Length: 628
Image 1 (cartoon, rainbow, N blue to C red):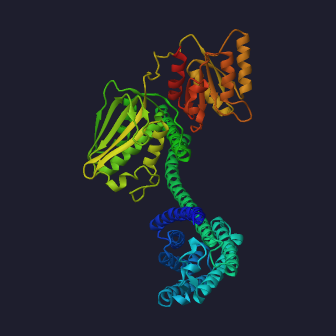
Image 2 (tube, rainbow, N blue to C red):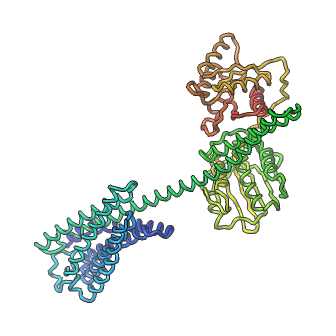
Image 3 (cartoon, rainbow, N blue to C red):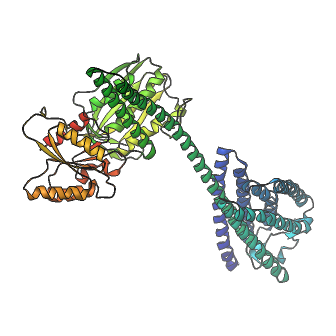
């Protein structure tokens, strides 16, 4: 008996593992069904529940035999046999929903489903009323030759008929799964179910072959401890679950992509509208200048409007880049007070909303991308403005924080500048607060749900943190934790006199002739003599010639990307090898390049983004020249 107990222990462990695996998958599929209410996920949940029940009852039969309890063994064997019967309607129900059923196929599978339910109910009734026709116990348990088969019933004619019907229904389902597997595009999820069904069919055939040998010798389940079909059934259910989960993931991705395209369309439409307005300003002013005889003062005003419109167009392209690829931050030391007051005042100008600033004089500077942080504050202020309906109060508070432990990761960050933006509006309902930073979540009729998700992405890329506190009727506060800097904001240390006798020199690396011309004119306006090069190789050549004459350039302005030649990074390496203290300013129109996010690590002293106005060019170039 001890040997038989050991022989039953290992198979029982395998069955327990199978039932646990199926149960976990079933709970997952049940959760998906409750979330989506789709029949496919209901069908796989039913298969999972039936598979779990079959394995549990099979294990119970073996355990009942090992403790010599034949009555319990027979009870569990009957329950297991009836549960297997329920696979007759469950298989066509699952196949109907996982495959693309046409009219004829739909009718066949639906007929099999309802016929299977009727047959299963018949088997249940017969098994309890007339057990000799389905499954009945032996009167003398001494006939059992193995300990683990004590209590197993004897198959009646209806039981045999059930096996034949299961085989027929399985073959029909496998046929339809095979058709879709080999003929349909994007049918990988069906392929999993098809392979699982083939494995289950093979184990069922193996089970019948072994059973025929057992009947010819000492009786059923003398060679086997349990039905091999149980393992095949487990594999079929698990493979089907994998296929359904893959289908769910693929569908979710498609929905997400559709939502992204819709949001991108909304965003692109908004930017296109703003761009058209910008172009209208530029084209209108140019047209007026051509067909009128404006005074010098009128010309100055028109050119000023054209310049501002072009600068606004640059901001629009930056917004599009931030949405498209997240816009890696290009950090620089930025005045916290100036950034907050300029952004908030600009976006609340013309409204009746009262602004209160509570920013101490000793507030630290930010080590951040001023453009991106401006976008964050802008989005939050615009949301507050809309919530207040142009009435109410917005309070902006600033403070210095040595360190802060992020509640989401437990990681300590710092030093930081904390910015709190508070409004006294209606507040945000608790059910929406957890989703407020999710992409595409919005409660606005014409919103796209991108504003706050972009804020979250920007601050996260700055290694900062954003959170909110809100109560319905009591307003909302957004808390921004941003990296601080103990460095001073780089400004002109003294007035730069363009008429002074000393001239500076600049080496410009730029492959666009039009931009070369603009840079040269701007340099001359600042009393800087320009030398232009179209490739990095040419720039290095000019520098070597200077060094040969015991001279050097005072500043270098390099475009990051040069088509068909050595770009800004490689050229900077060669220049720094020749002149270790060279002051190199990197210029680019593509703010998403990862190099720009940490340009000082590559030897650059400053960054200037195209297109640039003379004021911006001067405020970048001159401090670098004066910073000895």
